Length: 266
Image (cartoon, rainbow, N blue to C red):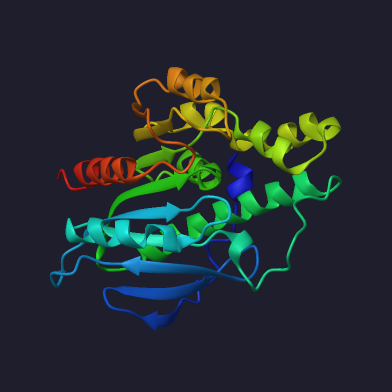
């Protein structure tokens, strides 16, 4: 996994402020794997001069964007936690589009996207590290597709203290194979993506872990969620009996509470 997240940290971030909003700032910074990463930072509204705040980096599900977490970001900021929302590479207009339904190249393209996101998340930590209002308490949240790169980040970067995995089965690579490629290439797709499967990364991180699993998911088998929960020694696992694939407000509230407790306990 370590080599998948390698990048040249000596290269400048070239951070640009794209927009100053009410309570948030849209930025871009250069990705070592090409193009500019789109992100939004939300700081505590009553930010004190000279004080440093813990931070959470969010990475979103497939076919969503960082906008999914705007409300959650502002709620956490009210509790004294800064939030950086990062768009995945596949949402960006400055990168050449890739056909993820191409049976020949889908696995390589999908893996390249996840690797791109992993490196971009490491650069997001570089950005936070360079700010004088962010301390060294950092968490990462990954939901569904976003959990692949988030899990990789926690495994390879010791700046991460806590991780939330939401809507994540043991081996999502098998699910994406069924979604994107013909049956005869399921196994090869899985083999190429298996490095990012959460069940293989659990032992690579010794920080705090929250796993949020739905019990009414029509997309991924319940048994796959149970497998991850069973193997996640030391993790806090929350089940949502009435929620499906996208979870819901109760899961959002639980995640915020857990993050606030872990990051503001000093």
